Length: 323
Ligand code: FAD
Image 1 (cartoon, helix red, strand yellow):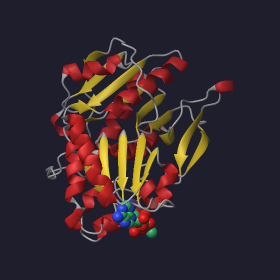
Image 2: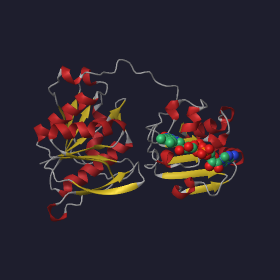
Image 3: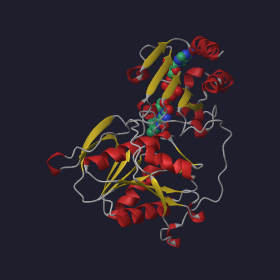
Image 4: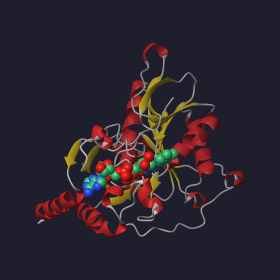
């Protein structure tokens, strides 16, 4: 029975994390000597859909329906579950993204499947078992979880599986699911884009700052560094609570979870509630004047120093590198 991948898109494009998820789903299919079918919902062009083949999809189901143009949790879950049933897929893989976290349990209910969210490993299928390592307690711990149900849903944490090119056929077929009005109890009427230049949840680089920056009047250096790096800006909770920055930039347990390749934390202490939102970052750089700041414990690179001296030097260095 094939594995089904839900390939989430935004503005007609797939994020890098979707190709990681495709690579992971391909590996799960290979473990089970079966094929990988991907499903895409929304307006995604044929060239983009073909990229799913590059990362291992044998077949791509394309759902293009005006009612499903914008993400609707319940309706998307119904479509994915219907595709899984049609394809006889017993394993559904998706990204543990913001929408993926809402979809996984809904798909699980519709398929009577066991669900693992926040997966960070391939299934260990020795002795007929199906065991997956996943994050727990907001990324502070790992849980080794066994799925015993026949159907399974796995939501993969971004940045935890490498991209693997497989160049499978990726042939695209239109898929027209049954659509039930009952699934549209809440719909998106309008999307109002924020003024941010780079979308924070999707950013490859994030420049984030905390109370160590002292006040909103000092944010120009954070924005300048972010502009130079093509990064999104973010902040700690107290910063947005104080109104120094918009709440849409607040990262952490009660804010946005990010998964960039590079997270630069400037004047942020590294409280567990903040770390909960950044644990899927690939490389973490911390700038803090306190060598005992907890953030250094999770940093790949740490700079002990005053942000007001370090950041301008960093800006100059990036400018010189770009010149
Ligand atoms: P501080 O703790 O005040 O740290 C400032 C840091 O800046 C210090 O480490 C200091 O050494 C450094 N610094 C000071 N001056 C300089 C300088 N000139 N140069 C360099 N470094 C300097 N927080 C979040 O961020 N996100 C959340 O989602 C979140 N959710 C929460 C949920 C709950 C239920 C609770 C109780 C708390 C939550 N918090 C959250 C708050 C969290 O516990 C911390 O209080 C908060 O993250 C601290 O923010 P901060 O690091 O910016 O400030």
